[in-house]
Image 1 (cartoon, rainbow, N blue to C red):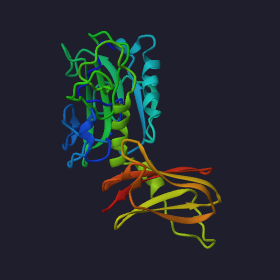
Image 2 (image 1 turned 90 degrees about the vertical axis):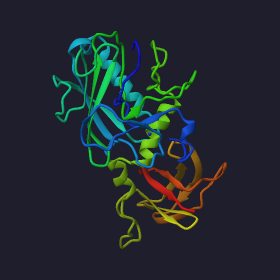
Image 3 (image 1 turned 90 degrees about the horizontal axis):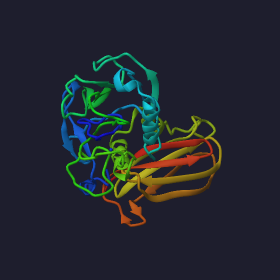
Image 4 (image 1 turned 135 degrees about the vertical axis):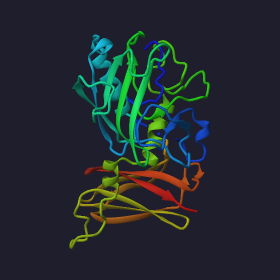
Length: 312
């Protein structure tokens, strides 16, 4: 890319360090409480009380319009490579899929599209413009990215992440407004923190379904529904519950919303059935502040996650 400057980012999903200390991080998120098709929004930090735009599903598909520079050799592969980079961010569970090509334009049609054009509200010094289709609750239902075909491009994209006003010599988010050349195309820690921040505050629907699997025992005293994980607040901490249909090794970890591991609550062989464990906020660096965190359980049956509220 000649310059990575997308006014309202979107081939990059959307998310902070521990709530209350996100100002130390460079990334910013998009806040827009309107409904309909939007190409602008306020720039806010991860812990902004009014929230920010986000997807409520973890599986997202984009199509590439091959008109203009969209049909250049290597562009489709570059788009897919960019998606793979975001898919590899952990523990956020988002999956960006390349769904092929489309003739769709920069319009609201239910198709997430990436295209090159000389109009669409982006011309002259504008290099790219993203339109988000929003519904109540700042939920994104469609995202279209129009890149200026008059500029020289070799890659580009975004996901609900805004430009940042912070100036840094290194570890600059992809939406750093003064990236020139091709040196800054890789995801850096602030990009990953942004996505994990969104995940921590707005777990997508599929992740929520996994996390909220019922924990009621069946007649044999086991969950009967496969792996599940829940969390509920209690005075001085939180209680996490999980159910195993078969016994085996269990690893239960707690992370902050930036994806940094804070504690390992279980790393042992457990029997089949339902289990509960209390977490008082203890971490390897002292007690965590009250707020929201998330837990991940890993077993031979698979993985599950849950948002963990930590009370005083």
